[in-house]
Every structure is written in structure tokens, then in C-alpha cells.
Length: 287
Image (cartoon, rainbow, N blue to C red; front, side, top):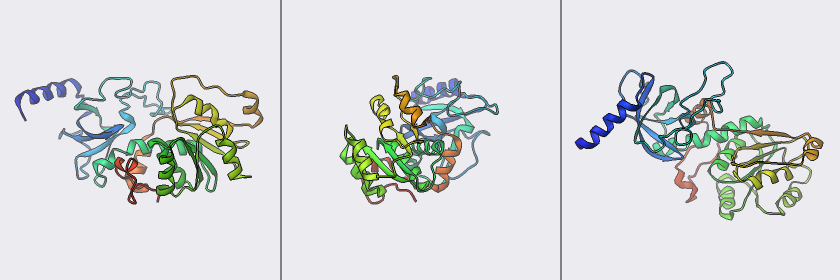
């Protein structure tokens, strides 16, 4: 290491390290940094093999510890790269409790843990039952994570997306037969296909205000709509229909430590993010 780079890292260490913190080096990432542990002090987590880990909740560095605390949506939540600077730092200190080390998963796999955790939390929020008719709108990375955990819950899945390649991916990699191209006739087409078994849970994972408002067209009487995607806009719906159908509207934000552990401990196959752009037989699928 050259002298100039070493001096720069020393300054960063002094600035960002705290008594409860652990000095980390960012590695490869998809949405979330893969972190290599550079601190060898007493705060280091138990040795599990490679010094690599996944960082919980996009580094929710500030959260209350009280009994009513919801760390994924705490009023004092601060997310690296969103609420506070630091998403592009090479070295940073974070609380040890936010780290989830693994001696089994590769760096490519660990990069997907936080993304998959969002789907895990959303499906738990929905309280899916085995055999339930479920619709996922939006088949991007987060939508795929919702799909996998809905499959683990035993749901009968339908998916909607505007991109035919994403729909093909869902058919080939997740064995989802009921795939529909989004558009003005999608709700009617889905109703024709499902007949007397319309979706009782609809996940909108688009982050698109128009799509989120149109998600009410798909839902069954007494069903629930889960907004996983977030949009910086107002969302409106027709209240007489909302009450007549006795619907439930849920928001799902981020993920929680138990979601990280569920994935890292092997309840879901985790593969490289490259598979999303180049589908292949070894791509991620629900067990």
C-alpha cells in the first residue's frame, strides 16, 4: 500500500470508528455493500471463516432500543447513502450488531441478502396462507424476492410486468405459469384466468404511483394490498369501493435482522445477481 493511501485510510479510521463500531471495507455490491472486516479488535464478530458479512438494513445506524422499537422503520432510522452520507465510502465504521457474517455464502451471494430480506419481510407482513391466490406486480430484483418467499409460503402465484423478458424469466426460473403483460386489460385478463379464485393478496413492487393505484383493480373481496415499492408521490383510491370490499392496505419497509438470518442460514437458495440479466439453469429458485 502506498503511503498516501495509508494516510487517507488512517484519517477515515479516526473519523468513523466508535467504541461500539467495527471498521469495514466495502467490496462488490448490488444495492448493498459487501463488507470485508478490516478491524481485528475485540468488537469483531465470532470467526466464521472468510472475513465477509452482510450489513443489515442498509446500515440502519441509528435506532431506538425500546420494547416498541421497529428497527426497519424506526423514527430515528438513518440509512447510509439516503439520510446520511457514506454509501460510497471505501472504509466505514458500523455497529457490530448490524453485521451478519457467513462462512458459507460467497460475496456475490451475500450481496443479495438485503435485497431478499425485503421480500421476506413483505411476505411476513402479508401473512400468506398455503394455497392462497397471490399476485405480484413488478418482477424486478425486489419483486423476484417477494416471489421466492411467497412460493416458500405455498402461495399460488400470478405475476404482472411490462417487460416480456422478465415474464419469461419468471416462467423459466420460478415455474410460474400465470404471467401477464401489464396494461389496461390486465385486470380483466387475470380475472378470466383465475375465475372464482381472484388474488386475496396483491403485492405492488413497482414504485410507480399509477401502478400502485391500479392494484386495487385486481384484489378479491376482503383481500389485502401490500405496497413494497415506495414512490415520492401521493397515492389515492376510491373509498366507497375500499370500504365495500373491506380491504386491508399494508406498507412494507426494509427488512429486519431475522430476515437476514433466515436467508443466511440457508432457507433460501441465494445466487449471483448476474443471473438476473443472464438467466441460466442454476439461477435462484425457491426450495
